Length: 213
Image (cartoon, rainbow, N blue to C red; front, top):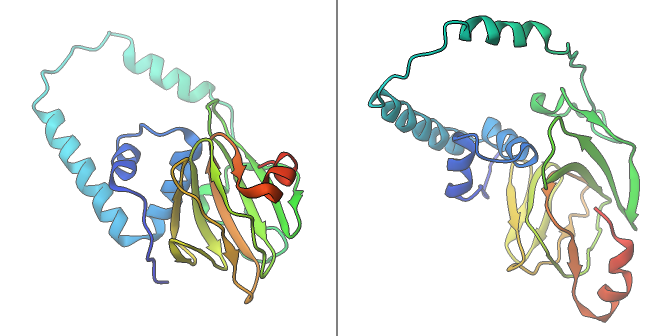
């Protein structure tokens, strides 16, 4: 698998520091797991952070700190991870997704459907699987927030190039694009999004209220 598109370095640095919301952490994490280049960058950031910690003056812990931590671990609800398969395919999803429950699939536009991912924490970002039929063409749009997209299967293209398995696409309110799915097969993406889509043009404004992701 050849990966041509990667997350911005500041996003990778925030991922390494654990500063991202859960939805963003999930999408970037799945990309890093399959991308040797980004994995090396994250490892370098973590090593720099570890070296910085060595220079920090130690702070004494409370006498019962270890007991309280172990008690929280013991009382945490048990979760069983079962394999989750991609909608309408036999492809198993990445391991990082297996601990999450998927919501019911719903159609959001012709040739486009999504399944929400139930996250364990609150936040402004939501995560979902987005499946597009072969040859699907979205209207040109931008975003009121941010959109992190990781291709799991198939491919799409827009003004920024072609995006295949493992590729990462970043969108925000400064980017206008019109994704077109390859005719070779369906495209399955893992997406984290804040805000909403904002469709451009007269037709886009007409159907925009009916496209909800």
